[in-house]
Length: 430
Ligand code: URA
Image (cartoon, rainbow, N blue to C red; front, top):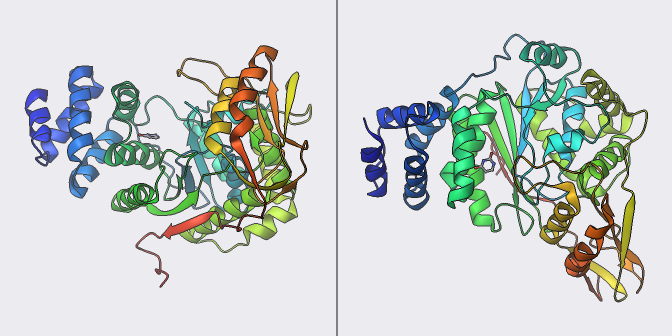
């Protein structure tokens, strides 16, 4: 075997053999294949794609590059959720304790955010004292007792993907459906969950801007999961407007606490309940997530999850020192709140990182004081910018001032879930 022949085969449109795939991924993980060769192969896949069986093998090889967590023998069924990322997407902070409160074990291993969408670990780290890293034994213990864990993925979970993703980031090869699908699914399958619900976001604030691409990505990942023995369903969901009102780490923790306490923005509640229902079906659990959320049981689980990892909610969630308000230029109904602009704005205020080594501000971000459908008067506050460094406020204010569009009539209400793609093992809706 040699890397050059494998690159040429893919460049010329051939299906790679199982042996070629296994060899390439193992050799790349062991630093025996050069970065430029792996980049060339990624570019060849970008242009020529992969057949379903080829992609399944590629994903298996990525899983085999590291350790697969063993979550067998827990007293609860395991089920997790993965989102392809959106602005204001704090759903995991509510969903993990909620589904745990319904009787499941939810082993959510997450990463840190890169670019304009935030990462779940960055949000949790806004809670004073909270630690992301957990040894596997402690994770099993917490999954059994509390049911929910949010933690950082260890370095030996799909290490081939870790290397490959960093390379794709700098070689223009992120936007390839087979590479995205295998990257996400190798990590989720290696995490050891029995079942998985994917939240594939589509719209101007998402990775996938158009529905056809989001649908193809969702179907590709659902097939990969089920072929690897993980019961997997997907929801394709809208990500044109900011999800909820808060974009920024501590601001999103506070909003999640509001939802766990029975309040919070309706779109966050709607999406959380839709995902929870799919997770419970896959886990084979009866339960009414809306009732459990209203009862305060999910909040109690979240408090236990936080203190089990050293965090404390008693002192309150930190807030930024500097703020600036943006007001409506005219009266009318809010039509949209451009998720990408707000996401980039929050990122520039310090909530996100440009390179994976950068640190993030816990308190920076943007509150959307007005949501689509709200009626506003001219001069009424519509956005509130939060920062630790006052000099960042003005340039971001200019950037996000036009992110809220206002019109004379109320926009039509839209459901956040656009499509459900169910695991083949479940009864399919007509
Ligand atoms: N997230 C991942 O984990 N991998 C990708 O390729 C894209 C998004």
